[in-house]
Image (cartoon, rainbow, N blue to C red; front, side):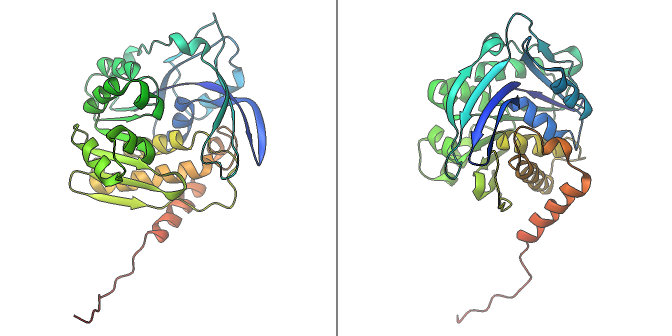
Length: 309
């Protein structure tokens, strides 16, 4: 197991303008592990209840996800979320959230997970993220994801997490909210001051940006004619990104850029169907096709600048 993923495992009921689904497999750890499984061997730490269906376990095992760290709490039900999307589907509207066994989730790592070289902390409570970081030994790379809820109610704890990880992965609105600025480059600069090597800014349909202390990279999103369900796109992006990085020899700037391409491709497939239905059934040629597409989108032909000066 090369990539440790800690986060939620859930069942979701979702309505969008293009359809609906009831009690489908969801959760940050789920989406990230499925996306990363095409590039590395992930293991997840999470908790499910007595109602978690065997077919979900089978799908994760089929994708090669290590489940030693998945706790099954028979005293209650699995974390449940119900929501819907309208219009351009940029924002989920929550109908119901039932934490169930996730409310008392205690992320205890199996011994075999403590030496994981790569760690992805899903957008769970920052206190739990810190608990995980205390258990891992000497990881090569740690990445944390977050959400506006923790920025609002636990900013100090979240800052502690940011100071301990190598990569901060956050969306544009959250970055500006946390740093109290309307300038995205300024927000990234402030986040880098906390000690991270890189800050990844997710911009949804407008792509992604990578900020280093002395570098910058911007990548467009893949234009899609139909987006069926945006749920899990950010987690799939993080999983694809870390999946790629955990399978390369060095953590160079070039490999980080390639990783963002990979994450963007996995997110693009995620939104084309509900749950992990699309990302769980991809072929190598599907991934290669969209990687090549992004490379062409980002290509700048060689030319000489001509001016009147």
